[in-house]
Image (cartoon, rainbow, N blue to C red; front, side, top):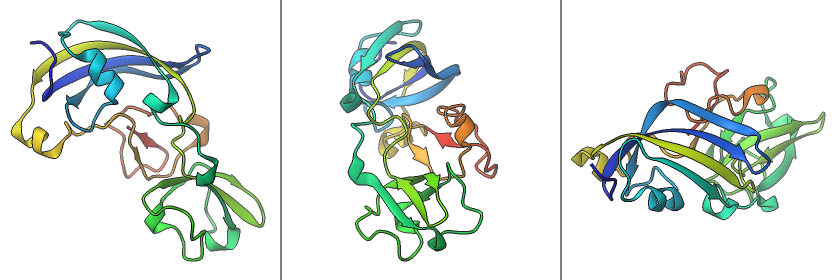
Amino acid sequence: MEINQQCVVGLTWIMKDTVGEVLDVLDDPVEFLVGGDDLFDTVEAALQGHEAGAKLDLHLEPEQAFGDYDENLVFLDSRELFPADVEEGMTFEGHGLPAGCSPDAPKDALYTVTEIYPEHVVLDGNHPLAGIALRLSLKVESVREATEQEIGDGTAGTGFFRIHPTVADPENAFDHLSSDEDDPEDPSQPTFH
């Protein structure tokens, strides 16, 4: 079956930055809905017409991937507003930020604690890969028809690097970028999808 709009593809990949540093390796196929919200437009366009077994090497500029880094999404907030056990790498949904945090912080963003000082906490609403050009070596492992449920939901259940709030381990921030099998109850596993 050829890849077209409204089908589901099983992909594996190796993602690198432009200097060749490996950011993520997906060895086990993960399914994505083509024609929904799961993949970047550039990736979807490149996949069109290919079949299982196809290998593609893509170069994605920041604006084709996670966007440019936006300094306006970085906020300094009082340390006393946060729980005593706040750690670098923890994430907070914008609408769930402690009362008293920056009123200019968009409520629809996800903020990562990037630095902690005695008097303040630095929150960054950018995706961890914002501002980074990516090299993505994809392999199409499978192609199938999308179900009505998947089409209606606009997803096969896995978005391309959507971030879900959890406690992140900054030492291993990219170890689980694409794993859909992270245990949401295990705070040591960040879930970047």
